[in-house]
Amino acid sequence: MLEEHGGGHDPFAEVNETVSRACEILGLPDDVRQIFCSTYREISVQIPLRRSDGSITVLRGYRVQHNGARGPYKGGIRYHPEASLSDVRAMASLMTWKCAIVNLPYGGAKGGVMVDPHLLNEGELEQLTRRFTLAISYVLGVNRDIPAPDVNTNAQIMAWIMDAYGSRYGHQPGIVTGKPVELGGSLGREAATGRGVVNIIAEAANDLGIPLDGARVAIQGFGNVGSNAAKLILELGCKVVGVSDASGGVINSNGLDIDALLAWTAEHGGVAGYPEADNATNNDVLTMDCDILIPAALAQAINDDNAEDVKARLVVEAANHPLSSGADALLQDKGITVVPDILANAGGVTVSYLEWVQNIQQYRWTEDHVNRELGSVMKRAWGEVHAYAVDHKLPLRDAAMCLSVARVARAAKLRGYI
Ligand code: NAD
Image (cartoon, helix red, strand yellow):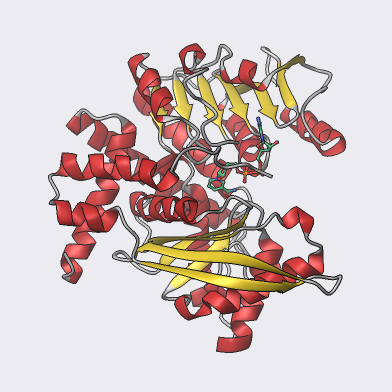
């Protein structure tokens, strides 16, 4: 599973830099900036976990609600030894802006338990999830705060959250999203983030004049997001010429057979060694000759060490925070367009929203219906961000953040608290 952040930096401070810049561009007063650069509510809980050997391990968990001006708080729960409070705050803030950019009626939140779940057996994982859910249940609610999966959490864990919450407050499937389809999860949720990335690429290429037929695409990460993006981008006429994952990279300038690569990965645990391609390093794939680069794995994957060598015309941030601030500035100087994470990977939370809508209506849509709704949300969001960037002569990252911050500020103003 993913390591999201290397040590040595303060993720919340980094997010706040972009938020402060947006407040400045928008001319918002400093008190509003202070509201947006801090969180509304933070709950820190002790989780005494009875292990299978009878001992007790004491864990710490957080739920951070950043801003609820636009609606109930929404955001994933991750299980990771480095899910520190600063990390969780940063991600809660990003959720506020991500939900606003795709115009979902949500605020932003995030949760985390500092634990390596690979060291727990299934029974322990279930017990941990139930205890954590009940400990934070006072601030959750279908119309208050709705968790979802994140790093190291999955549909099964969401099912336990729904069950634990329901045992105290009555059955409410809309309390959590990313559930198994059998328990009210949405069709299309699994591929939603990768599909949203491809929706954005279709729109961006059109507006930026990048021909898609035969366009060469390189992808870092071949997990949920990377592999779904790889499959779907073929439908636009592109060819995927390079893919990397934790095992290494593979390059084939004639285009990789994605189904065959998926089958190889399933059998061998990674893309390395796939015979119909040249073996490469992860860095070779990031810096290879291509038209579109999709970092879909790690935070800070493109950094001061390799940004200079990136050759793509368009970089689409499928992962969260895949560019360091230095790399971002460097790519901008090189004239490379970067679609920021809060826009590019918002397909996941968009289909989470669609799941919640279906749960509330006690109705199920077809996968086609979900995909169409997702497509129209992503298309509209791209159009708004791109138009704002052109009108205000801003990079897409600043344009997206300004648009989001303006929407949240407007909602807060209408509610009367700023
Ligand atoms: P995943 O765990 O399914 O896949 C991660 C992939 O990254 C794997 O192929 C792994 O091998 C690869 N990887 C790990 N270390 C690597 C390395 N050093 N070099 C190259 N590749 C490496 O995760 P995912 O769900 O696909 O998420 C990918 C990114 O997208 C994360 O940043 C995540 O936060 C972000 N994201 C995911 C979703 C979602 O719905 N899954 C939504 C929004 C954002």
